[in-house]
Amino acid sequence: MGDNIIIRVQSPDGMKKIPSTKRETAAAFLKKVAKEFGFNSNGFSVYLNRNKTGEILSQNKTLSLLKIKHGDMLFLFPSASSSSSGEGMDTATSHSSSSLPSISSSSSSSSSSSLIPRSSSAPQVQEDEIDQYLAKQDGKIYRNKDPQLCRHGALGKCVHCVPLELFDEDYLNHLDPPVKHMSFHAYLRKLTGGADKGKFAALENISCKIKSGCEGHPPWPEGICTKCQPSAITLNRQKYRHVDNIMFENHTIADRFLDFWRKTGSQRMGYLYGRYTEHTDIPLGIRAEVAAIYEPPQTATQNSLELLEDPKAAAVDEIAAKLGLCKVGWIFTDLLSEDTRIGTVRYSRNQDSFYLSAEECITAGYFQNQHSNPCKLSRDGFFGSKFVTVVATGGPDNQVHFEGYQVSNQCMALVRDECLLPCKDAPELGYAKESSPEQYVPDVFYKDKDKFGNDVTFLARPLPVEYLIIDITTTFPKDPQYTFTSTQRFPIENRDILGETQDFHSLATYLSQCSSVSFLNIVSDFHLLLFLVTNEVMPLRDSIGLLLDAVKTSNEELAQTWKKSEQWATIEQLCSTVGGQPSSSLAYEAMGGPAAPASSAAMWSCPHCTFMNQPGTEHCDICSLPRS
Image 1 (cartoon, helix red, strand yellow):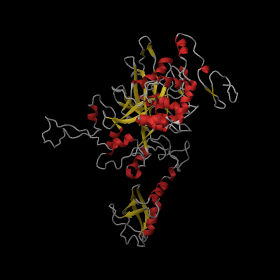
Image 2 (cartoon, helix red, strand yellow):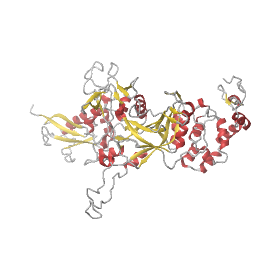
Image 3 (cartoon, one colour):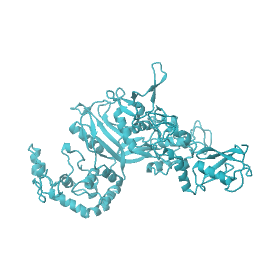
Image 4 (cartoon, helix red, strand yellow):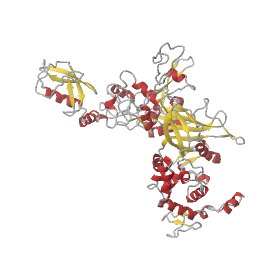
């Protein structure tokens, strides 16, 4: 019994106690260490000292001869050159939690994240270009020498002129206007500052789900323990935001989107396509620049919107990526006419009602979870989202205003794990679900002041959605910018209810209006490019790459090269066959005469054999089957 000893071994994964004996050989002891930590036999090294001196080699010497006594601390370091052994350790240590959700609990992971250095725990993540650019910036807020307070030479610095950190709250509060939320990269600098340079900093995603693999009790609802139970959530105002400004390149983008409401009175929704750039008004800020709006299939009324399945969604994202754009957010209208004579709208979203309803917050959280933000500081490889929400609604002056928002990371977690519901009769209130035999839901709290001014914690049943919202300034530039330079308007997709259809007849009309314009300007229209790729008669998805490069780089020579291709010649032939509507017919319609029927105005594709038939026929010339 006197020979039994316990040796402590500390590793980047924590400390473990290894039982042994004084007469045990170093080789046998190292095998125990490898088994305990899940390493291969050659995937690590053990040292007597923290500075990697006094390595214990696999030999037949006993621990007593190596002067290792009961209670001694040894230090284990994984071999940098042995990647396979590292993978073996990860597999062994995470086997019991292999069925965990992709986002881990912040409370349960906080203890381990404080022990694992960021360099060994962070995955290899390809961050967005704007994140890579801002990570390389200095970010200091430099100040000039104060002529009254500074008493030093030109090269000296004092407390009155030393550069400020970009997360300095006093500086942000004294900006005009004051900044309520620091930028996300300023928040990262705050985390990674200090003596350790953020070596142990880690961003943990919140999880509201029970950890699976706990074998000490039956599964929920028969049992639960503190190891697998998600922590309660107290909602706090998020101190940072992933996007600091939303900017539409020009007014035309917004006006064309609002045209649908102006003509029908029904609400409308669209996806914002653009790019992320630096926002210089806020230290290390990010701006979402909107270059185009894509309107997916939807059914709408004056008070509701319902999205339908979009078979073209993947093609739209692919075209946008080739144009150097990505989906940066979504926009919807909430407009009600106040006085049609002077064109005013009702001011309905304010501090007395709500800014975003609970249902809209849940939808925004759903979209943000679909478009997560790649982040190296998170062991999941992502943290938060840059996906923004824009509402076109009435302002205090009864004119159309564009308001930008995001929901917090806490809201994203509640939505992702299906813990948040809207209230039926109060749009400004959400409701945290209660636990059921099918799902365990952690308690959700928020703090407010009672009638005596004391801070009181309330259960989030119901929940004011202001705790979940982050507002973002939405702007238009003084000097309009144009990613798509076409001066004519090609019909927008999915607006058949307005009689605006995307077909070769509308393309022929569009091209006839642009006869005196350069070819690059003609094709520099987002909706036209979508039609060329997604039309059913002659889709150009595999052959339009050169044209997209020409639009992306504003290169007229590339556009002229593509114009000489066989595909464009075929399109021109189809347009000439279809032709535009005769001018006499247009004049007759302008005077109030009946419009020509659609069947006589354009060629139609047979739904059975896809043959293009001449206008005015009701049966296919090839298969003789009826048109409908």
